[in-house]
Length: 378
Image 1 (cartoon, rainbow, N blue to C red):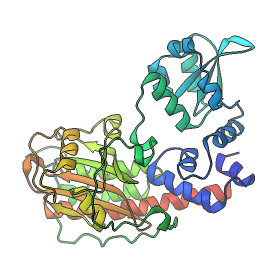
Image 2: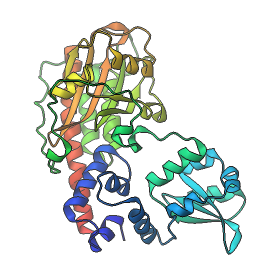
Image 3: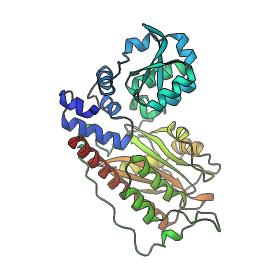
């Protein structure tokens, strides 16, 4: 039985709460249980007990994880722990040759087999909440948690205070029902996107067309596929780009294309978190819910400099483009970009990227609805 179904059956959560967590999972990623905890709908101990029921294995309680055997922790090692998001507890009391391991996926044979080969012994998988495992990996192995798995107030970005009135509604004011109004289609006068070539290149392979990106989003089965399609379109139209997830008072990196035109490694992008609340091109877009194409409103451009450093940009651009994705009256993504070699992004390319933001929001809405139906019929 699935986690959500089991929690509903036992009346731990209600249907509307399950739907809220499914929506958060589509928009912000992470496991269903992680989103339930982050929304304050269940606690980590309850989640651990139900994960153990779902997977048919013992639960790794907080007390058991606190009492982890130091020798086993050292033997297990950082690389193995990080690769499998697993934390070693120590030898089993009645089977000392068997090592107990807390896992977020305790029933995946490939992961279990890989750990057993690395340790040269049998392991006994235990169930534990993803958030709890990540905490102990950071504590024992110094594996830094990505901003996605920190509370909004803990995101590793300096606070910026602003006296301006915020235009975004508070989370309590936002309905869990998706209400998305797609933008108008791009003008027929725009150049055929299939003939667009990467900026700064006289020749080379054609990049993804608008229609191809739109079809990819329309048929996407996962949120990551939606993000990749938008970035694929941006690759031929921007010199550098970063796609952010907006949550709480921070914009957290999700996908990136560096200043040299190469895609950035996921881990490098996901470590980036910049605050919202001050003055920046991100904030200008976030406050209005409309694309921002122009210079930064901040003289010192502190937020933009963080972005440029992450992108490896040598010459700071004057004109920048930021496009929002809005779901349920709330900005959930921001796409930052600027032209190659200091050039301004063309109006046609701005139009394509902006129009595709509408498809991104519609794609999220479709995935949320599909997840809701799937949970109800199974």
